[in-house]
Length: 65
Image (cartoon, rainbow, N blue to C red):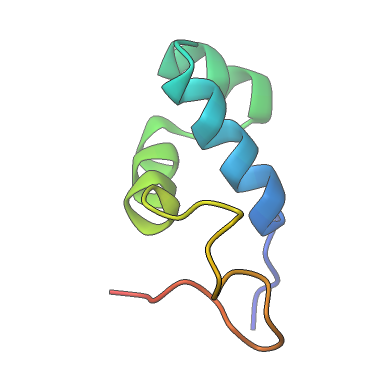
């Protein structure tokens, strides 16, 4: 099984930067990901905040579609 390249916290940081107004192409270049990967990660992690009660508990991950 392939291991993840970025941690959940790093992904949340990239999404937060995009929400703060940094352009997506610039973020993708900076972090070495494609636009498609960014939008896939945003769809998966976009509605989750680090303060959600289910975030970070042992064995819990955001739901996958």
